[in-house]
Image (cartoon, rainbow, N blue to C red; front, side):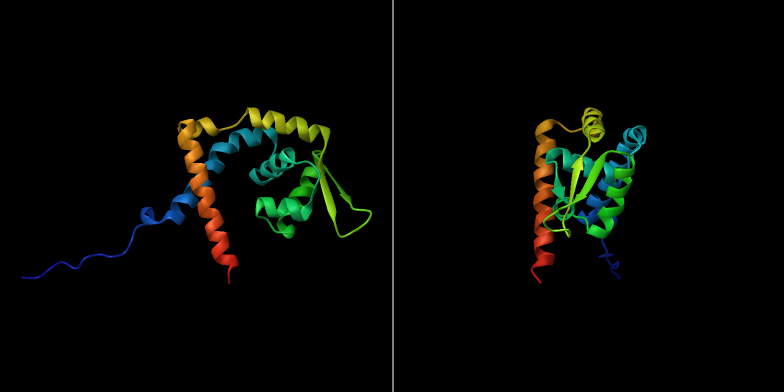
Length: 150
């Protein structure tokens, strides 16, 4: 009598990292029609929302908030500046510091973007949405801490 060899490999659906990754891709697809209407990329949208939350931030602080390196954030800011949504200015006391501020049109765009949210498309009740957000935030922070503790 022979026994069947059991397959011990895990499928993609068994990986939390894949679930988060594929959910991120799905969010991108859900936001795309709204962002196309506004003429923004998802990264530009998040940058504007971060500035709407706290206007006049240094590039470094904004990058930390968005988990982006300066070399990634700077082209985003340049495009937003060219569109007239943000203004960048060097600190007179320390020219290494660059402050980013939402322009009046950037503030209006943020107000419009927040009204066009796609949270409803997640198909979740408010308390489930809040619980999922908390869980994913805890996961993200734990992963960052584990990488930075080296």
